Length: 291
View 1 (cartoon, rainbow, N blue to C red):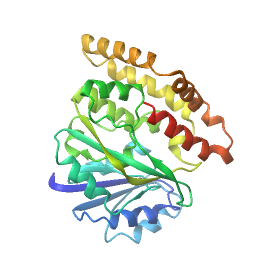
View 2 (cartoon, rainbow, N blue to C red):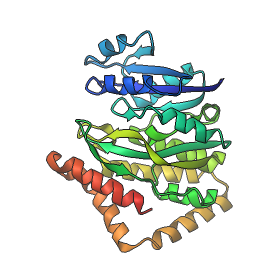
View 3 (cartoon, helix red, strand yellow):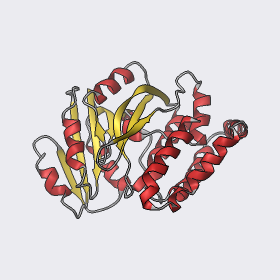
View 4 (cartoon, helix red, strand yellow):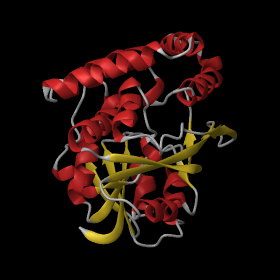
């Protein structure tokens, strides 16, 4: 892998509405040592035509539609960078995003860095800043408990050492929304990867009703529980028992208000589309900030 090169991998499927804004934000980075790999996963809209306009600046790979995991793996196989940045075609980087991520990740070894983020709507209007809970001072074990409890890092804010993909593969799942969470759990529990928060927003994260990650939240939450058990079962008995015991204890100590909020999140997929974005924004902030 080339030292200091950042590989930005963007899986695209019918992303015509926001694709140019996304690509322009990556191309306008103040950090210059970047390769951009876009996987067109069988789009049937004008995504490919848009991508062709960037063919002199972006490595475009087209394949028949095989899903998110396949698209990511295609990009990972092609990347040459020391660091991997997964990015959604719905979202937008600030011009200094990759500069800030690289500055931070170079201070640590075997670490995934991530950041706060801005929530924007379909039209790019800022709804609010989302501040992740700051767990930088926790021990690795304490952080992993929060991760097992459902601390789902926004993958679009992360910078990940490419060397991790020699140990962990992106796996196709029945619920593709859980792919990044599974990767983070594997990294933390099985490969002792650390996580470090940058306490400022580095990404504009777009919320809209057609978004894959919010179409059926209740099913996703149930599926995530299966993933946790799968990974815990790969630990030695003593480690697994310690994690299970401490996780139960941690969950018992959470305030009633927090438990009610988490139950409300499970009901979110039943909300009408005209209130969806506002309700989702509310729950994202209240639940995740309370962890």
